[in-house]
Length: 181
Image (cartoon, rainbow, N blue to C red; front, side, top):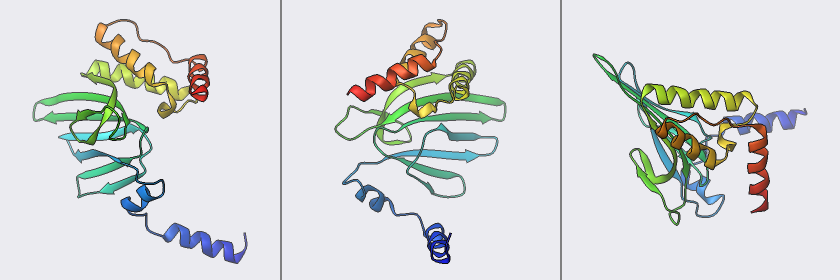
């Protein structure tokens, strides 16, 4: 690497992150989806299990906001407790949308998102996290999984039926179908 390239690389790393309006301006007037995140020790932990935000903004000591481009898939986990123990386990897999899409209003998600999977309760959340870990063990990114799989997983959990496996063959079929669209 030449001295000029090193200087340019150092300047690129030192440059501040672009503003949100600049991010949107790169691809036209792109509507962004904001997802609220929070952490208060021993009280609440609202975090992303997977997803690639275009930007994360630190609002204060406890709160952050992750910003996603349309069609991004993400998973947000909510854990809450009080003086007597855990009061809530919640996991949501959702897809960021544009205002022209049909979106669902979800607390902490502005303006809303397409809900692919919603589970409540410790056992269902743990079962879902095991599936996510199994998918990642196959070398498949959880954000690349077929939205239909997340819906099926949610339906099976609700009906207390055996949970489906996500196989490389199923993933290849999803990718092939997406390429044809």
